[in-house]
Image 1 (cartoon, one colour):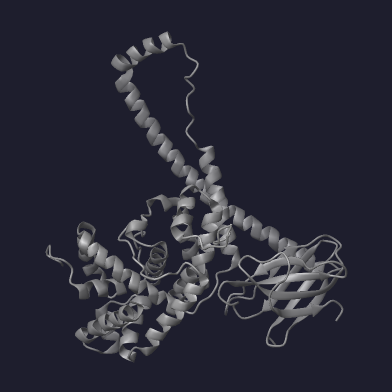
Image 2: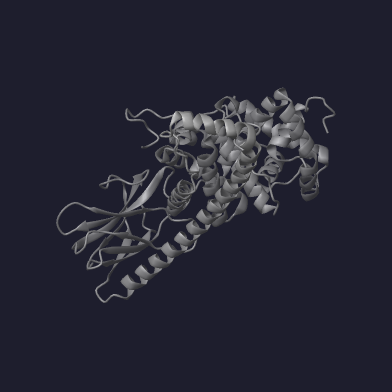
Length: 183
Length: 271
């Protein structure tokens, strides 16, 4: 079955996840089709290695299959968890750390935006890229070094030669701008 | 450290962005686990930071990853079914006999039974763990054997005297695209390579064999990996089909029964 229901309406992540709990492979397939591109692209952006990114992708969806019943929709969104877990695993691998496995119910991730359809994903892609493109260079660089390279504010300060306080301010300001635009 | 106080909003934001040094993260996370208010705020900030993923260049994973995921799921499910704990059949025992045994059980054998159950439980857990490990090894073996079988099949087709080569060229608007098809009608095998950019979001490429008579036959879907190693895809088609041409179209989702999208590559047999 496709992510669209029999009448063509979009099936929510939550409905699909409920079917995954009942071991419905078609539901997992629909979730995979919906989010594999985003998850893979994020992991590959961090690792610059398609094979390693594909391993993370497969492991994450395997974890969804095995532990879907632990996911509590009240505490967060599946899309958010997938993106955060992919990022954490990729950074752990990048920095050769043995990162703790991100459990489905561990510190939820709340997404205030819709990522459940390709159209919604495309709209948001443009919006987020627009925000990042409009940020002052220092803010954008600091945020990208933290999120995609896994650097702490101290490491960013050393790398860029900026005072630690400036780095912190830049990251917070960049996040605040993102929040304001997406609100 | 939070010293029992709520995590300052600016630290939550830095934590979500991944900018807090690892040694300081543990204390903040530990506080968030105990404090629903901070956990909720952190979840919001993490959701915001997660959207940075959308700034990554969007690409599709190889189509084989999904197939491997479901092969892994099925292999483990089969292993679990083999290891399922047997359910004792007590339905047909006479009631009086069962009652008598229950008395013994309760007063004499209960501690022994508990110990045995515990031992059996441990053994079951160990057996399950071994079963999962075995399933994982079986999966890896299956992948390797499939890969070997696939390679042998490819070499067999490539070496066959009656395998034809059809060069594919990009259509107007996709002039840079190229491809090569090897087709053996006797074996019903189509193998091909294609130099194409990643397809648009939510789309895939689909190869078609257009026969001398009848409607196009799908020869598989594929997604090239950008800057990746040169890939070769293969598909089975009905035996002894006389091919007129091969074409690649852009199609939605998991492919279509008949071509519907834009044609990006065409190769005429004998052309």
